[in-house]
Length: 399
Ligand code: ASP
Ligand code: MG
Picture 1 (tube, rainbow, N blue to C red):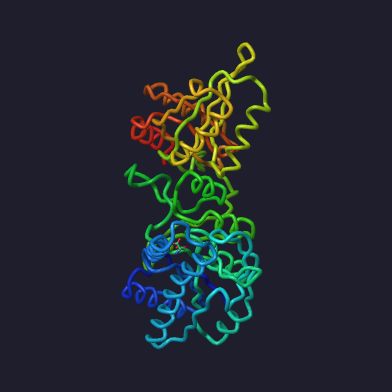
Picture 2 (spheres, rainbow, N blue to C red):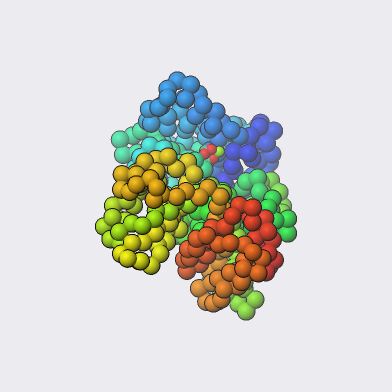
């Protein structure tokens, strides 16, 4: 009999009414003959509220205690869901990370799952109980409670599905993965399936549907992940390995934009890889995420280098660069939108970039920076061109 591991996000368990609705949905599924494991997030904005509480106590809350505090959110929702199911006359049991030996390592606030014990879960499933597990939390090597990073319950669910050899379903407040944000492009199409790699690229570009590590975990162990609207029959999207490219497969699967970065240009630096690597090393050591690096060809031994960084890191980044060059050589461009298209079809289809640039040039859309990977093309364009670019490219590639 197959085990189904479902995860319900914060908005799906935001109220007691919604928790009851989830309970009904899970029971219905169990009645179809499945063993059910349910991972829950904290109710609604509970995690944000707990963080605010901590900030009210301290400007820099102790990390160990912050994890102890944040883990309580998922304990509340898991106990309530188990209670709701029992109240409806079915068997259920809630478990915290400690109770299922969910072992983590690494730092508080962003710990990694090492392993978990399935004995207790399997025993409860054998007794026909619906097993409810508090997501987002683990226990580290010294026995402290840790959390997996914001949105981490997805990763809890996939890890459990891997260990139980089960089916993984993530339920949230969107009804699947779209080719592009439907709020920005009303014709956006829902995808039936998307490859792990494409999903990871889209997630790194700001498509906040899922915790990235959950996708990596699914990919590593070959567990498909279904993403859909909670308590609904609407068909969602499956994230899996898509390798049977057929004649009608599209080279581009998704489009994403982000206004969260600025472009930095340093002019006239000595063409010396040491200087550049020093600058990037210091920026990297401050955990500032550099992207879209490009360099001009050397003229008289000097080059211009451009890259993007998150807006929020502007001040810190500037103070680092000023240690290496005079301020008059540093230029900041705040008016950029990162515009990306993603598709594993690009590995085998050529000319995607050419088509995109042609459309941009025909429509007077200036491209300031370009980077590519095997399955992604990203251009930095002016923010005012974003809407036009989305329409043109989504139309051209039938997204
Ligand atoms: N409750 C945690 C958060 O809000 C974990 C999760 O939702 O997956 O980040
Ligand atoms: Mg949450």
